Image (cartoon, rainbow, N blue to C red; front, side, top):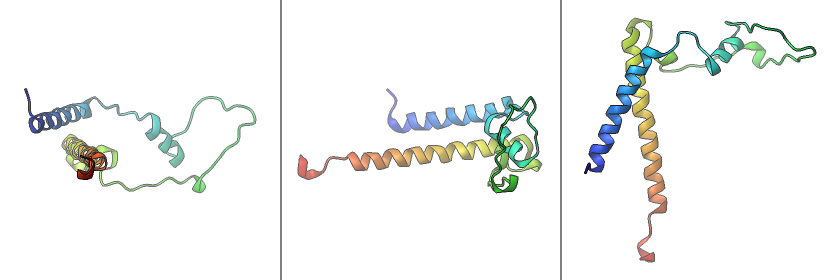
Length: 117
């Protein structure tokens, strides 16, 4: 049977492999949240009919901005696909560390005290 350390390392390796391969299957046409952000930024227009009497809401005068250390899941145009793979690997490791930290914190909270034993 596999010990905990080997299991965790195997899980990290598998997650990195999936993340590294998935970048090549990503669509060049954004959808969902990213597409909504492009509409808010004015870089994309919605097509189709607008219902009669629909209200238009603008937040911050139609501006949307953010800064990211790894925008669009990459490290810049110069690195190409390699930058995407590195960004995904770093993101996967950071997400794993966050979950590991939360699990450790829950373990410490639920740890029985010596007085109760």
